[in-house]
Amino acid sequence: MPPNRRRHDAVGRRSGHPTQPPDSPHRPRSDGEEPGPLTITSIHRDRSVTLTGRTGVVQLPADYVTDHMELGYAQTSHATQGRTFDVGLLLVDSPIDSRGVYTPMTRGREANHAYVVTEDNQTSLDVLTQTLARDWIDQPAVARRLDLNPVRQQQLEPLLPGEAEEIDELMQRARQRIAERQERKKRIERTLDRGA
Image (cartoon, rainbow, N blue to C red; front, side, top):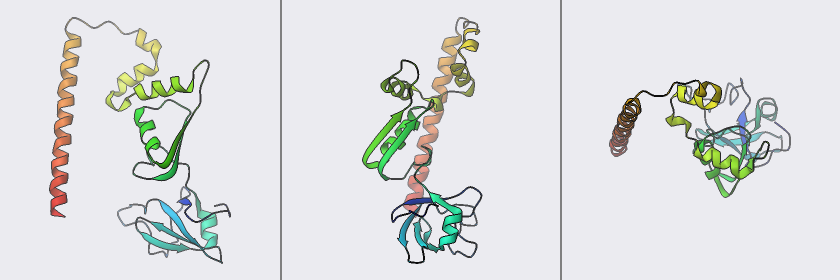
């Protein structure tokens, strides 16, 4: 980690290294759960740092921090879910769907900014409009593959009479099952919350 770390900086472990030294009481739990996001709360004269995370507080020696930790500013949009930052920054440099925009663009307390890479005659508004219209999670992988390969899409045969209605009926039943399962999950969570 660079020596110019400051209080309130977010930090994370480098890939392949434990989050804390082997003798730390704040190592990941035996079920493998990581301690989550860590924030520098103190920097000491000997350059060791005190970190605060979901599982508690730990002081790490300067050499360990330098060798195994890095600043945690850049994260995937999914990793930001449930976190809050002073300012949220989003880089849109490849196709993403509406969820890939919504999550990071709602993380900033004071502001959220999107930086959009454009190609040819596109404007950033064109790219964001296309992004917000995408909803990949509701598409089967086969449909998604066809969307990404327009040549293959043109080779499809037209639907036979009645097939469109059959597909619509199957989709409606699938949506109904999903809604039922989501409602069941909510009931279970409410029951568990009452029991806690």
